[in-house]
Image 1 (cartoon, rainbow, N blue to C red):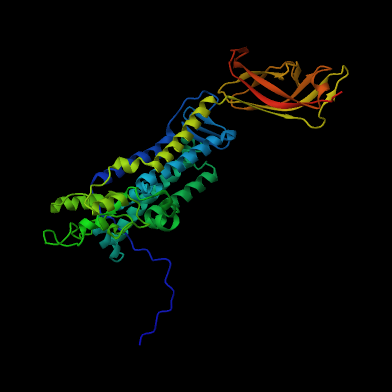
Image 2 (image 1 turned 45 degrees about the horizontal axis):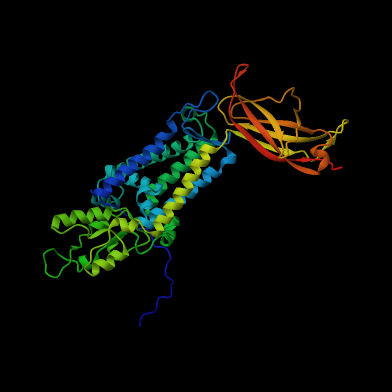
Length: 483
């Protein structure tokens, strides 16, 4: 009598190496083009130039952490405008919801960095070691001169790709040509070398060895996506009612599936789509290309494996044609996601074009709250911070108003006039005095609302100023002593 196995089942299955077979088809071609475009954008963007004038950097896309600014071609984002970044993150999230609701995990299959770099690493592996059968043979053979040579070449190329990946990333945070020269000469900051080392190591490990393990165990998106999908979501599926039972073509009673395993051999996740939807499936479409190629060879119609929805399965099993793609894509959920996504985008664009190049902040001085002068007038003091977001030095002037039209006397500490010159893309801090004549606002109320106006007088050209048109305001309070 056998002894029952009391050992608990393992929650982790040891990795089985996957060697995807090369395949040709529409989805593979689409993935090649998308990979080339996304890698091109990533590696080339830091080297693009954009003339912003002598006071600003000329790198088109730059995360200038030292000066706390973000440049994107003609757009400049300041720290207090972080809501633009938050808006972009919201749009990215809504975009993921939209595409997942419409077509499943298309982000994972075509645009995820893990997928893109893994595709690139598999391409290098195939160049060096050959296609699937050759790679399996090399993996199983003992370490000899051939295996050492090919592995060394492959790992070297992987490391170079990882190095380029880490290098491109840090180029987004400072001037790319200058940093490249400093990296080569050994004069770059240690943080730059550390970041490059970390990104090189992670790219090498994730793209070369972990691969599908990152998608299955590390990434949370496969577990979240179920909430974004419904029975009308297009995702990759196997038409079991047409393919089963599997067997040789031409034999009576057999389905269209000839059990050639082509769909399994090309899958970068190593799954069998014929077993139904699985967490590991990234809907990359390579199994569709492989199956369509085999259907062409055996004279069967394409589409045994394709993008389809659960509602299509029900209709096709009943002998009805599937819904059109557009009916799957345009439905209540996707329309709602699109409307939300578009509204956030329109809001960001409107806010971007309506924002002022002048940023002002005024804070009343609390000690003392006010001073009564010898003539009976009351003076308040304020700390004024004025930021010039123009690319040139500008002159600015100040005034104050109330709803009742009272007049004030303004002065700046240490200045003979109310005209202040603020350098380009810098902040000027001033002590501002606002004085109310005797018997007016300060003498009639303990606390009154006033509005400070900042007028742009134009760019500075030597000692001459060209009149500007921008005028902004900031509301504050005037403290007094009621009679």
